[in-house]
Amino acid sequence: MQVFVASLKQCLQAENWPAALCLALSLPDMAGAIENPEAKPQKRYAQWFDRWVGPKYRTNVLSGQHALLSGAECYALKCALLYQGCDADNGRRKDAIDALSRFHFTQVATEHCTHKNLAFQLHADRFCRDVGEGCEAWLKSIKNDARKSAALNRALKIAIPL
Image 1 (spheres, helix red, strand yellow):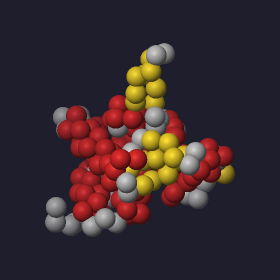
Image 2 (cartoon, helix red, strand yellow):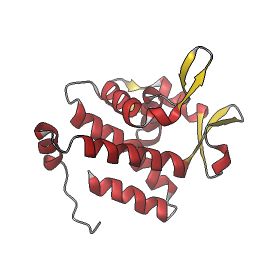
Image 3 (cartoon, helix red, strand yellow):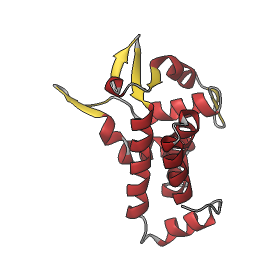
């Protein structure tokens, strides 16, 4: 898993936004599968994102906290980008297709978490860094968990210098 986080950082440094976004949207899937392997993919993705990245995408309003980007919405973005609006469980997903019009990635830092042209803007670099940081924090939190460490050790190995 660390190799994917390191690759995300390399993509960001190279300003390879498509690759960075693919990795950032995939990391919650990988981590969620280790964190909660019994849950369905959408549920475990959303739960992992909401816990490890979601706090950076919440704001306080009069009625309480409001998610600017929820785990379920991020899952829809992942499906929209990686699976062209489909997922393995449900086939075609309306929420994934809708995500393409509701969320836009930008390279303008001041437009992060703002609305523009009827879409919620996410600064690609900042979003990817937020997911990477969430993944690093999660990895630290599970280092003494034998089951999760064993699952990480069974994951795909890619030998690249970090």
